[in-house]
Length: 98
Length: 395
Image 1: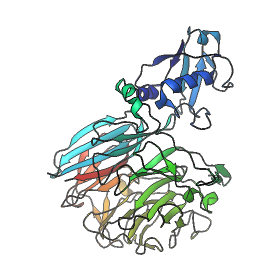
Image 2: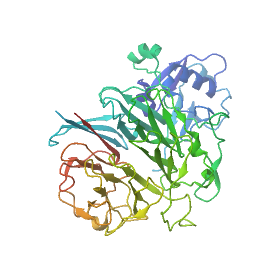
Image 3: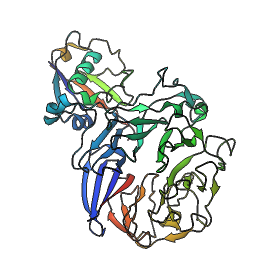
Image 4: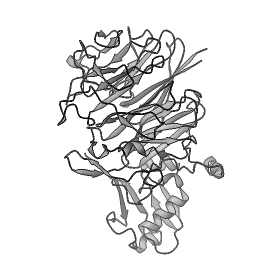
């Protein structure tokens, strides 16, 4: 079971709590987590990554176990703590300005 | 009994203000979609319960919301029947936030580049829906003007959207450039008599017209003069801010340009300036009285960079002669220390008699006049910055 923390606006859009849980099959990567997220919460398609290119939207960042993994390959395996559910995978809206 | 609805889009949600035909007491409902930018909301002329809303975020993209009960409840129209159960649990299966430029061989145009602020070429990238224009005769059909500039259409109530690619694919496309707010298609005008005729306006490309229901487009910028572009009378490149039409005479168009208030008497083929005695001819919105085709309203502001009313006085200017001669309307509006702006989609008229005029400010006020502009009253004073104002007059 993977834990995912969503930013406020996506919580309201998906009508869910701040933290949700997802089943991810195979390697736990940014891509597999986002695939599972979008399958479970279709209204979030296009909000974290673009519809067609599946590129991360420019003002969205990812954190795993305290590390900024935003610019890592979407297919890179995430830390064990994410895969075991010990820590949540965090989707964060980038803060612009002050 | 007549009901008037004001649909207000703001930086932090949507509000619906409702009154009876007397327009003295208003019920304020909202915020809907709290925290999201609502660029525009507009109701179907043939089904007032059907309202479309553009919910958008620079962070999390574009959502289309639809109401089928006059704004009481909303759904993302991408939901399908099988999702009804999930929707009851609060998880609608929305897919309507998908606006993809049409690059197919059959109907599309190659995704070229357009001019960027620095003059270099820049890829076409979808950002948001600026304006929604429901069809005049079918509640399930609606047009969407988007940034980067293109025109989309739905015929299934917003579930799916397809691009009318002839516009973006016009040969002048690579010369289009963004205005300060981005390269947005912000105005869509449907001819009330000729169903094949559509007008649109793009900042900063100019005005365009289609006479074949959106398949092909012609720039209609003859007569516009823009000192701020290399060729002031170029075919495209003009920063048109808004265009309005009057249903009783659809060949007459009124335009508020970056500078200059303009008028066309031949469906946009040619334009002439009617700024006349305005204190400044820069502004964003322009509106036409519902029952008086030659009565028009603008809100002049100082610019290029200031974007607030001259002398700290919020004044609507009215012309009863279709331009040239203007009078300041000030009763009920702040006449000192006022530095708000009124954005291009934030002014509208109702169809009641006498006609009502409404506008919203970046300071969060929505002002209403139920005597054609002679006097004004704030319906609400402290909303988030107002992006758009539309009205519905429901018999």
